[in-house]
Length: 82
Image (cartoon, rainbow, N blue to C red; front, top):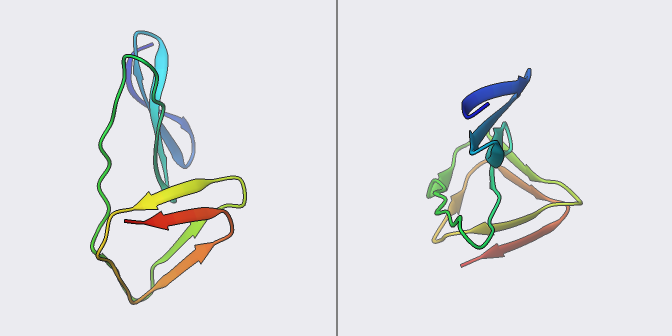
């Protein structure tokens, strides 16, 4: 089924042509890129106080900077700030 749908309690998927092209959860948004699908992702310029963003051990993240971190950025995997 195409469109936006909740697949689990805390996860939402975007599907097109019966293919999941993006998933969002409390950690952020993940895109699936192939030869015909490309994506742009946005991130806030400030991680506010009281907010924790976690990059899991099996995850990679690219953050567009500059970024101000007043909260917590917990990097267990790989992060690149551009």
